Amino acid sequence: MVHCKSCLQSIELREWAIGVLLGAGAIYECHEHGWMRDRGDPHARERAVEAAHDDPLAGISTETALAELCDFLNSIGDTYPECRLAGDSQLTPALRTVSAAAPSPTTAVVATATP
Image (tube, rainbow, N blue to C red; front, side, top):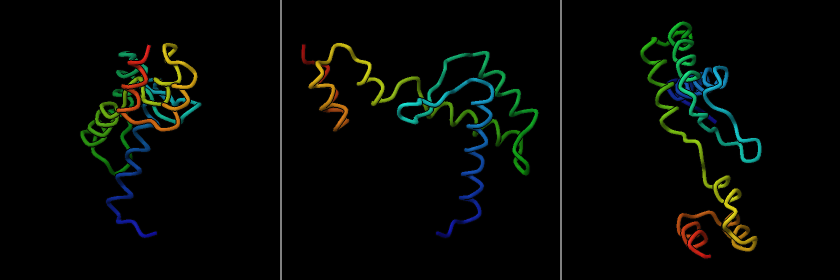
């Protein structure tokens, strides 16, 4: 597979940002589903920003490094479809199974609307 140099740099920058955020405790990976989740800890975010400012990825400006860090944080949340459905105690087991098997916004809305 052939990748352009800028694509590889973009991937490397994203991976660096994830590493900085994980190291600062600002995000964590769901062990069950593999998604990155925001801890919502403002002090951890500050530590991540300080780390990114003090030690940006080699060859990348501080501004670019900080922008990537912020872009990644803004692209994730503290919930995602699989965990929200699996943790919803209001769903009956059958609906939870159907929703998890075919996670779509329509299925989730129908499933959560059912008493």
